[in-house]
Image (cartoon, rainbow, N blue to C red; front, top):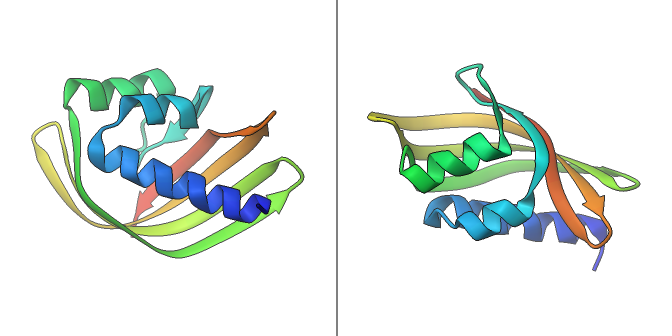
Length: 121
């Protein structure tokens, strides 16, 4: 399987894990040293992100990916993607379009997200 197909598979696993709140898969896909800028401007870590799912602070109802661009340089992949996202964060319903950038790195045989950011468009 090509690296690009591996990333597409990882992206699909990530979206399914976000919708189902699958902590195990999120733990597998997020690197321990992850930093991610969420649309509010806050920088979060892997631990913070997983705790949001575990505690129920975030619930993803629907997510549809479009306009995905993948670029690979050796063992690093960048993914730019547009999402229509419907979620609840704390007590606030969020329903809109967002543009995300994720950076994946290949560790031995596993791709993990090491950084990323998201903005509302």
